[in-house]
Length: 215
Length: 242
Image 1 (cartoon, each protein chain N blue to C red):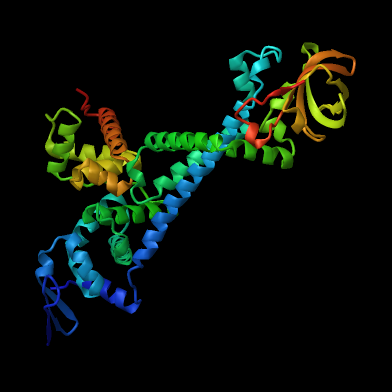
Image 2 (image 1 turned 90 degrees about the vertical axis):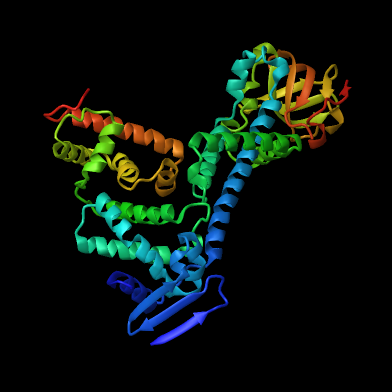
């Protein structure tokens, strides 16, 4: 067992290593993403902190925006994290780290879309998500919640990518307009317009279903 | 505890010896886009100064003789090539600004408005110090067909029926000059009674505008003005010589 203590750092780092397993116990884990970056630049192993924080979130996000196998998602995720590490010096401190890492994932997936044709995504919604979306587009909710959720998912899958991605970011990833603007690199005004159009299109698609949701 | 995925990432970073790109790389990239945007604004300003110079040097005092209304003359004289190049630079500036770190946060309208205002303001400044005229003259001397797409002024100065012609002075012998116009027609000019704009500066090879009474190929000139006055005379009227 190897143990060392780095007292010269502002936030002391205590790291222990047992075999191949690295334990990062410290105060780094309590720092914000933005505060962790300078430490990672000095010690590569601390990148594990960010991987740990974003692995599941990004895995879920990627699954929502591209229809590929779990193995492919794993590969995409790995490429995204490597790209994040490579570009750490390019992190714009005026952004939140979360927006920045989502942007990298978003761009990577978009470039994959361009390189190979990917089948439409089947959007998986929880009942809570579908209720929030139904509320936002003002449709009747007198139907069975499960059916409503499935229908919204079906309609969302039919939306063009640019509309689908903003709805996913807003309702499934819980991002606000400014965060979405930072992720998709569009002015916040454009994001607002796009979300409104996406909602209208979604409502129109739902109105075409056998159980009409048009009010 | 580090999970398998974290371990895999860290091992990949180690095995492939992946290191973060230098912060200078990002700074240089961002500065490069800002510099290119500034350069395109500057080039756009040069276009504006050339357009202003062309409009400024127009023959506004004889617009009616040339068969135009003032507005019609502006439209006719407007150098389409310069306008198209200017639009190109504005779009290029928009492209470069958009590729800076924060560029995506600005709307197309905001970027274009700022670029247009900056190009016009800087362009008028360049025009005032003579850059527009210099560029116009430089291109007129070197670029074939420039008078068709750039400065079209001379094309409108052929109205013998109204007593207006223009051309290149090919001979000066006292009060008798010879001028050849764009159609290669030779004109004999009698300048005895003419008021001549900056007479002492008119030399063989210069392009001039001539007003007067025309009969066959002879012009009894009343007023002669160089199409491109010398640099220091561009913005003021010289004493007339007679």
